[in-house]
Image 1 (cartoon, protein in one colour):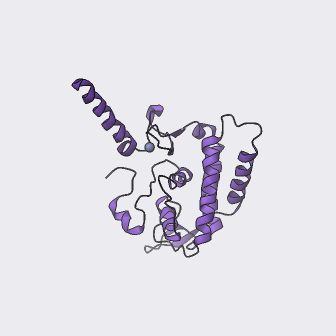
Image 2: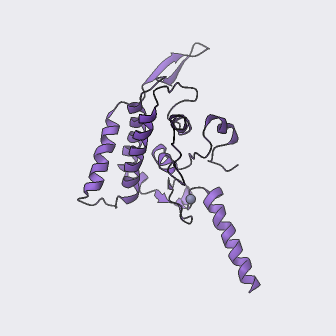
Image 3: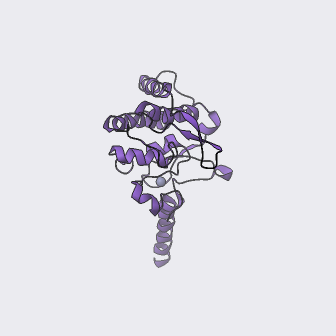
Length: 206
Ligand SMILES: [Zn+2]
C-alpha cells in the first residue's frame, strides 16, 4: 500500500480514495476534486475532516450536513484559484482573485473548533476539540490553514504542481533539496518510471 494514501483500515471509515499527502490540510482539500468529486456526501466530508487531522477520530460531527458539503466545495474552488492562479508576486488588480480572497477571509473569520482540556482515565488533562463543531468552525479551520500558507513566503515558494501526466494535484515540497516532483512517488512517480522503462525497451528493440 502506497505511503500517504489511506491504508485499508481506513476504508471502513469512508476514507477510501481520499488522499492526505499534499503536506497541508488546505491542499488536501484541493485533491478531493480529482479525478472525480470525492466530497459527495456529509459522511465523506466527515471522513475527510478526520483524515486531514482537523478533527480527532471518534469525534461527533452531527452538524456536518449537505449545506456544509456545498460550502466546502465553494471554499475549495476559491482555494484552487488562489493557490494555482495567483501569480508571484500577485497581480495588482484581479477582480476574480480579490473575490476569492474576500470569501476565503469570510470563512477564516469564524472561530475554528474550540479546544478543551478534559480529564483522561489516569486523571491527567488532555486537549480535545469541541465534540460537535458546526460547519462554519470546520470551514474556518481549513480557511485559516490556507491564509497561513498563502501569506508565508517560504511555504508559498514550495507550492508545486505534480509533474505527472495530466495530474493537477498540488503539494507542498518539504523534501530535502526541494526535489519532490510528484504528488505521490507511488502513483505518478511510479507511472513515470513504468513509462520510462517502456520507452527504453522500445528503443532497444528498434
Ligand atoms: Zn500526480
